[in-house]
Length: 192
Image 1 (cartoon, rainbow, N blue to C red):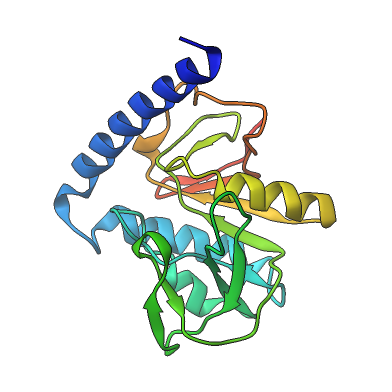
Image 2: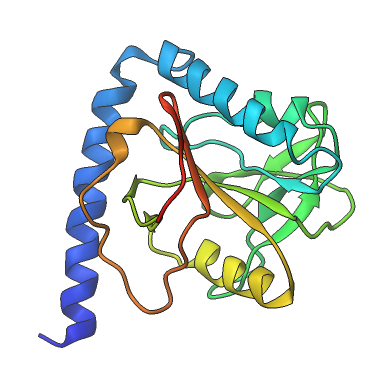
């Protein structure tokens, strides 16, 4: 087995375990206290970034729903759009009443709207560690996107997760991009 195959197998096993753990957490259903608390913490963090372009996401697969914090943001808001395999994400303007259509991988995207470049990015994840690394679904979309945004200027990457999604160490590769903050129902973790 090559090193790449070993890493792929390690990440696949970590994803399966992270999905199982998140399903246990989500057992109480959407709108449970940890979701509400995490969204409240996120809303507080975003107040310091009023006026900046915020990119959130449309929740799927048991992710915490960031839309209440996105709707409360004092500034333009966008959501990610997958434009093709192995490409960075693009971001289309969003508001709570936006007409949405299914996009790639089942996530909803705005049917129309301006394309925006975010300064603040809320990132979904399966697991995270104290160093700020995250485990995603394996497409590399957020890593490519963060690399490009960071190369072009400043961007704040905020992971949104349950505290129980923290692991000792996320398996990582050279292309994996760390988060700047992780927001959970228990507060804000600043990696370091």
